[in-house]
Length: 397
Image (cartoon, rainbow, N blue to C red; front, top):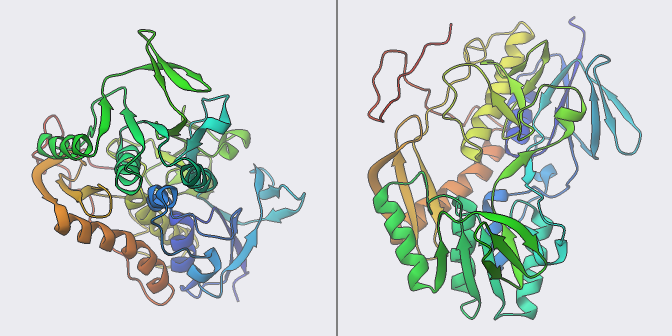
C-alpha cells in the first residue's frame, strides 16, 4: 500500500475550492486539507452587488467543498518551504508533502484615510460601503479605476442610489481591453446615469476628502471606492518565494514553483513566467482552470494517470463581460489571447448571459464534487495565426 500523502491547499477562493474538489475525487492515497481565513466564500465577482445592496445569496466554503476535504479556518502567516510546513496565526503548524498555493489577491492599499476609502476587492469593505450609503444616499462618490470592477461599481451605484454624485477616474481609457463599440456603450450608459467620467487622469495624492491629480486639481468625495488594481497575498514573498512587483509568485508552465515543484500555484496569486503566457489576467476565468490544472498536475506528480496534468497549462479566453447595473451589460467576444473582437451582446441578452456565467462558477464547485465537470479551451498550437495584431504563439517545449 502506498504511503498516504498530505496535500494542503492554501486559500479557499475560486482556484482553491475547485482544486480540492477535483483532487479529492481521485481516490488517491492522499489527505486533502484546505486552509482559509473566511468561513464564507468570498464571491468577489459580485462585490459590486454587495456594495450596492443587490446581492441575494451567499455561501459558506464548507457547503461548496466535497465532504472528504478537511477544512481549517485560520490565517496563514508563512510557508516554511525547507521543512514543508505552514505556520498559522494561532501558532499551529501544518506539515505537507504537497502544497497548492492559491491565496488570491487584495486591493492596493494606498490611502492613509481608511474611513473615507473602501476597497472593492475586500468583502468587509464592500459591506461597510453599503452601510455608508444607507446613511447618506446623496453621497459624493469617487470610483478610482475604470476596469471591470470600477465600471460595475459605478453602474450599480448609479442605478441603486440615483441621488449620489458619482465620478469614475482612470489613468487610462475607460473600458480599456474592450472594443471601441463596447467602450462607447459603457460611456453612453454612465453618462445617461449622470456618472462623470475622467479618463487619462493621474492621481498622485489621497486626502481625507478628495484625490489630487498631477495638475493639482482636487476631486472631492465623501467616500472613494478603490478599484485601481490588485496585489497578491504577501505570504509568498514573506516565505522566500520569488515574486513580481504585485506579489504574485513565479511559476513555470506546469504551475510549479521553480526549485520547489511540490508547491503548485493557482489563481490570481501566481504569474506564469514561461513564454506564451503574457495574455493571462487576474480573473475567476483564469483561476478556475488553474485550480483544476493544479489538481491534475499533482495527480501526475504522484505517479498516477492525468493527460491534462502531463502537459503544460494552457488557456484560451473566449471573452469578457461587464454588468451595467441589474438591467444592462456587455458580453465581449475575444481572441484566444484576450484581445477584443467586434462582436458584443448588450441589454437583456447580456444581463442573462452575465448572470449565467456568475452562477456557473458556483455550479462548477458543486458538480465537481461528483464528476469532472469544468472544461476550458486550450490556447491554439504553435503556428496557428491569430487575428489579433502582433501576436504569434510559441510552442512550449
